[in-house]
Image 1 (spheres, rainbow, N blue to C red):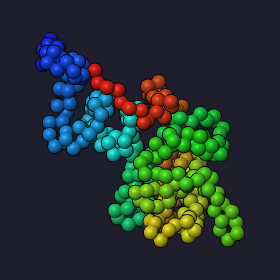
Image 2 (image 1 turned 135 degrees about the horizontal axis):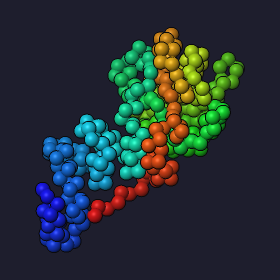
Image 3 (image 1 turned 180 degrees about the vertical axis):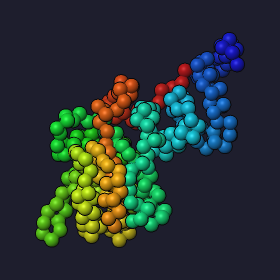
Image 4 (image 1 turned 60 degrees about the vertical axis):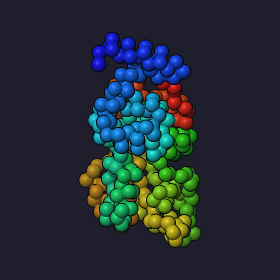
Amino acid sequence: MGAKVIDRLSADLKRAYPGLKGFSPRNLKYMRALADAWPDEAMVQQLVAQIPWGHNVMVLDKVHDPTVQEWYLRAAYECGWSRNVLVHQIETRLYERQGQAITNFDRTLPAPQSDLARQLLKDPYNVDFLSLVRAAQERELQAGLLEHLRLFLLELGAGFAFVGSPYRLNAGGDDFEIDMLFYHLTLRCYVVIDLKIGKFTPADAGQMSFYLAVVDDTLRHPTDNQSLGLILCKTKNKVVVEYALKASDQPIGVSEYRLTQALPEHLQGRLPSIAAVEAELSPPEEPD
C-alpha cells in the first residue's frame, strides 16, 4: 500500500467517522504493521488487544524479533507496565537478562518451584537510578536502593513485597543484619538480598546460607516455601560462584548490578529519565 493510498484512505475514514480519532496516515501504517506482525486472530484477541495502542506501537518500533515482541507485550500486560516503564525495560534489555543469574535452585528446590524461582532472577540488575562514586560503601548502596525503592521494586519484578532494610535477626543471643528482606507473593517465600560493593567471594555464599537458615527457622510460616537468597555484587567469577553454590544446600542466586557508567554509551542518552520511569502509572496518550 503506497503512501498516497494511505493518505487517501486516512482522509476517507476521517470523513466517514468524524467523531473518531486514530485515522492519521501514521496510525494506519502502524495498523498495517500490526496486522503483518500478528496474523493469528486468537493472539490478537488474547494479548495484543489487551495492551494499549501506544504499547503495541512502541514494541513494533523497538523490537524486531517476533518472539521477543510477544514476550514484552505479555510482560507489559501481566505486570501492568505503563509506556514509560515498557520503554525502560526494552532499553535495558530485560528479555536478555531475565533468568540469567547463576543459581543452585535446580538442586536445592523442588520442581516446579526451582524453575519459577530461576526465572525471577536476572543478571545483571540495572540500578542506573543510583549515583554512586567508585569508592562507595555497601551502606551507600543500600541507602540508595532504599531511597529509590519504587524503582528497585520495578527492577526486581512483579510479586516482590518489601519487608525491611536493614532487617535484624537474632541467633543465640547475637544480633545480625540482613541488607534487604523481601517476600515474594507468588512463590510464597522470603527473599534475602545481600549487597556486595566488590567482587563475589565464596565467603559471601556462606554468609547467605547462614541468613537463610535463620530466616527459615525464625520467620518462615509453616505454609511458606523455603526462603531464597540473592547476592548482588559488582563483579563475579562464574567458576568461583558455581563452586561456592555447589557447596551450599540453601537456594542461592548470584547476580551483578550495573550502574549508569557501565551501560553502553549509545544507551545512556536514550534511557528514560528517573522521573519518567517513576511516573509508571501515568495513562497512555490517545492515538492520533
